[in-house]
Length: 178
Image (cartoon, rainbow, N blue to C red; front, side, top):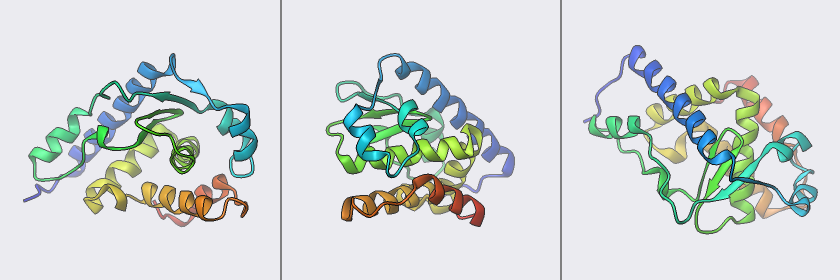
């Protein structure tokens, strides 16, 4: 049975999440590489150039990414959140660490998260992600993830149908969908 968290505990989790994200970004930034010119050319129809310029990618297939300690604490309290290494990729602000295969769909998905971070800021992103996880209980039902999956699906199903990810993120922010 899940233990109901009080606001003070949630705020501590958000702070822990923000610190974790920043620490992981710093850990991987130096080895991460920018998008290729071909990727930038094909993706500039969906993302502003500054997003494509700051995004960095690193394959960590042979390395276990440190799982946040606060997830273990939550799981001990009855929540059931997946291990971070079970995901195809993880975005830490503008640094994307990926495992196995970086497909065009996964790359697009993670660039949506880079855009969300840029529009929301680190603390607000961590707040929305943490509260979304606590409220939904499921990774796929976190609104930030729902949007990334919705947009990567649109991209893969019809890559010639241009839309602006930044405008989509702004729209969700304005409508309070996160």
